[in-house]
Image (cartoon, rainbow, N blue to C red):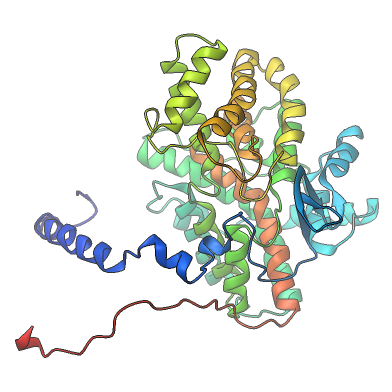
Length: 462
């Protein structure tokens, strides 16, 4: 373990103490391991889900709805194609609506999720003007905060920036709905800047690259702002901005039970401030089992292309089998991007994204790459079904395609999860307001202690 930011004496201490910590870590692990049978004995819902993957009902929401099963007359559940509704409106219809009119949709969706109904032309214009006005960071914030010791992981750096914004807020702890809404709109507008500026600071500090900071333009959409501030020449095509906008729309919200949104509910229920709530959600989204999954998909495909003989079904199937047998890539036994905690036959977001990226990939010169993704999407469910016991269908999820889209946009992998956060902060904000509006109790689930009772032994007799 080395860290050049500490003194030589402290580094010497670390070198000496780490072997001891590793031995203590074994004690910590052994003292906290719980035999799997205990979970069955007490019918504990691990991950707040039952054995069939159904989530424990922990709250009510009016913000979005996810459907993956239909119930017949006898009360039996049957898998169905996934449905996602934002405030009661099918996401497929929302996307068809704004894309058929050749408009950007993210700002419209943000308004819908926050306020319950689609905006009128006048309301949408006002909303965009509010976001444009908020799309500014405090004076010297980039220099004093973002540029100061940039994190090696952008999500940590952005979370630090969010927490620091608390210090720039004249009324940070007021949890009235009007103040929380003001803070939420400000953060929604600022997230593209926090993310892209953190990326350039990372490149400058860690990779010794040029530092590029483009100021936002008020007339640009959120998707355009990302590309404008990210590209060194600020240039992008309309089709690039539209496909990124679609990605933001599809990632903006996904029910109250996903890990980061549930984190938002938990922290909000304690009465904590908006900045702490968003930073906590950021910590959740960073995890590779949540927002970091699309990076794993891209890395998996990079490894696949290096290790398959050709692009035939046989070669791809052989590689996918090796993934499941823990003989390829990261030896996790997973085919990343396949399956979902809720959806069974299909993830509606993946269906929508797939429909639009075929044309986009051809236009960007990634047609052959798309064909490989399409092949894996077809073969993987069959192979998983042969080798694993599954209680519901397996299909590509949104992460399967979002990483591909990010790659074709030339998006650096460091920004994959922050792009997700730029979208999802809308959902987090809506759920935080919902939690505070309903005066709920502090969220505190129960844990059963299964440890043995022991007598205290004086130190000299141990």
